[in-house]
Image 1: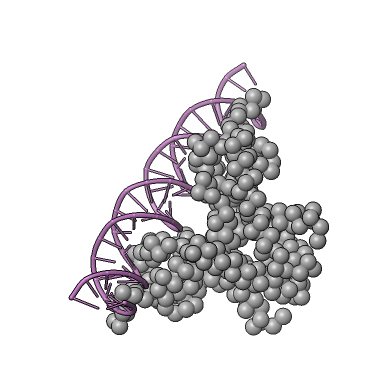
Image 2 (image 1 turned 135 degrees about the vertical axis):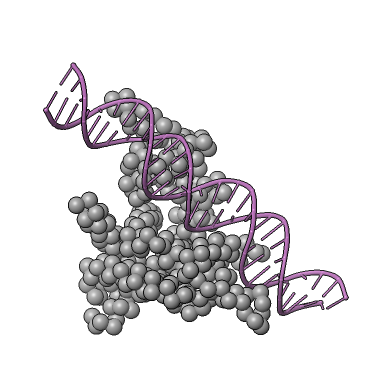
Length: 156
Length: 156
DNA sequence: ATTAATAGTTCATGTGTTGAATAATTAAAG
DNA sequence: CTTTAATTATTCAACACATGAACTATTAAT
C-alpha cells in the first residue's frame, strides 16, 4: 500500500468511526425511553447477560474507575432497578443483580434497539455483513490487545 | 438468513460496537495529552479541517444542542485555542477559527492518533481492510439516513 | 501480629448534556 | 414600514458521567 493511500485510509477511519459512534449513540438513545440513559441501559445489559456481577467487573468492561461505577449503580439502585448483596464468604465484595422491574425494563428497551440494528443490518447482503462482522470483531480484539500493551507499559 | 442467526448477528453487533466504542475512546484518550479532552480534540479537528465554522454547524455534526457546543467552545476559548469572529454581514453568526497554538496542538495530537490507528490497521490484509472500510462507510450512511427518518417523524 | 492488598464508597472537581429563557439580529407578512 | 417569525448564539440550573484522593472494611501475605 502506498504512503499516500495509507494516510488517507487512516484519516477515513478516524472520520467514519467518529460519526458512527455519535450517530449510533444517538440512535440508541432514541430507542431508550426517558427512564434510562445510554450508559444505564448498557449497565443493565451487562448485569442481565451475566446474571450477577461486581463493580470491579463493570469498571473493567466499561474501562472506567470504580468510583464512576458506584455513581451509576447508586442511581439505578435509587430507581429500584438494582440489588446489592454482600458475599458472605468475602465480605468486601458486593454482588449486583437486577430486580424484576429492571429485567422487564431492559427486555423492552433491548427489543427496540434490536429492531433498530436489524433495520440497519438488513441494508446489507448476507455475505457482506458476515464479512464485516468478522473484521469488526478482529478490530475489537486488536484494540483490546493494544490497550493491554499500553497499560502494561505504564506500570513498568 | 434463518431467524436464529439474524438474532445472534444483531446481538453480536451490539456487543462488539459497544466495546469498540469504549476501547477506541480509551485508546484515543491515551494519545490525547492532558491539555485536551476527547471531545475537545474532535472539536479542534472539525474546525481545523473546515478552516472556519459556526456553533450551529458543530451542533449538527456532533448531534447535540447548541448550548452544549457553547460550553465546549468557551472552555477552548479560555485556553486560548479558539477565536470568535462576528460575521459583519449577518451579525447573528459567529465564526470559529483556531489560533496558531491550537493548530500546533492539534497537529501534534492528531499525529499520535494516526500512528495508533495505523498500528491497528496494519494488523489487516490490504483487501480485508478496504472491504471493511467500504462496509463501514455504508453503515455510516445508513445510520445518518435512519437518523433523518426518525427526526422527520418527530416533527410531523 | 503487623503490614499489603483488595473491594467498594464518599467527596470535591471538572466536563458534557439538555431544556428553558434571553438577547440580538435578520427575514417574512401585513 | 412596522409588526411578527425565525434564526444564531448565549446564559443558567440541573443532571449524568468521569477522575483522583481519601477513607472504611475486609482479607491475604510476611
